[in-house]
Image (cartoon, rainbow, N blue to C red; front, top):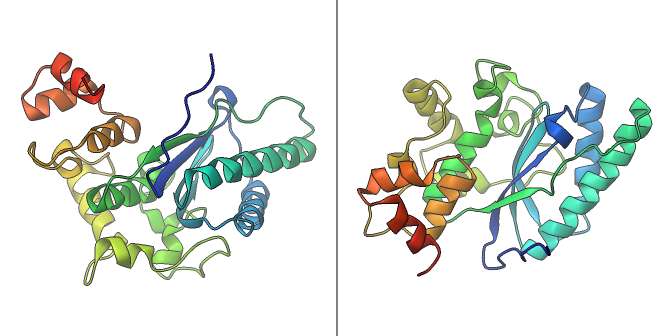
Length: 233
């Protein structure tokens, strides 16, 4: 069955790509640095901006801004070139990545802030470190001034979404204090019922893994009603 085309109206995208059968895609620091080099070179051929990233064990996250057509081309180039380099370095022949990358639109500032915190806290949630600044393979350390900004990263995005007097570090600390690094609550993710859009709900499902039942319960509606609304009936 042909894959459905991706939506073309959004300019902010939360990207996730996983290893085949959830296997590791990075064996050491050398792999991660090679990935960053490939990403920087591929981005230079696009108009896209990479605002955030974190490289985990069997997957990575990025926040990109720009046309979805360019996102698709970029992701194919990055994953293909990195897989070839990884397999050559580790003497492998099998597929490195599994399904095509996952791309979720970021609906608004509320969603952008939630995604920023979620991506930054991924190493904490996975138990790799107890603070995002302690994980060297992500953009958080550039945001808090721990290390220089890598070549592929844009600047100014966090100030743009958090506003004056607020920082990603502050938001992460509030999330850690409240949830010990867990995903944001539905109250944090979703606006009041009168303001919610389909994109808000799909973001909560696609990015943060909430179920239709959980969201229906949050708004006091039936799961059937929520599904019908999402389908545009």
